Image (cartoon, rainbow, N blue to C red):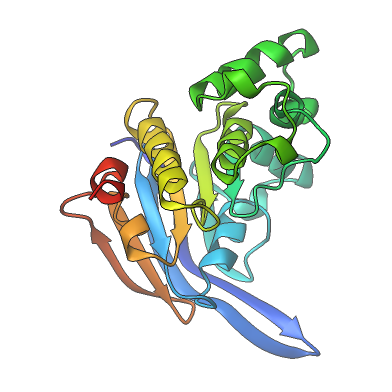
Length: 241
């Protein structure tokens, strides 16, 4: 296992609604090392999505500390935060978030528009990411021509195109049938085991969380448990039983 990549210490996130404070994350502390596959699990409203937004530099904490690569979140400028989101973090959401009437290739190229990568290399990098998720035969297809599982694979390819340190997968199988869910989990497993990507999986489902090597269970904004998975479930084992 690699060095520490993410560390949160007594992390807090509170929202104000009509002047009334509503705590979403309360006094949370943990560490994630480079190359780990971690599931953050909890029921709806538990605070797991709020935690994802903070870890993914999409929102700022209200209190405590968040260290990414041993540097405090608060020390990053807005420009540096934007660069980290673009270059070091990849996001896969339940709703896919693909541009309609835009080809698979163009959807996957989107993060490159805001990168330092030369435009002459964009097609090559995007095609490589699309190949990694097994969709080379769909390069010119638009989202409306794809199945749900294929759309999610495009979303993963888009998350991969800048070769990020961390991939955040927020309920990635939530809108999929079991066969498509199997394919998505197999891709995430391979990205972790073969490519060494750090995977942070957000889910409310135990059987999905058990693909990870560690489960952090969140309840009412607090860590209820943080445990290693003794026998990791593989996509093949679960979806073919």
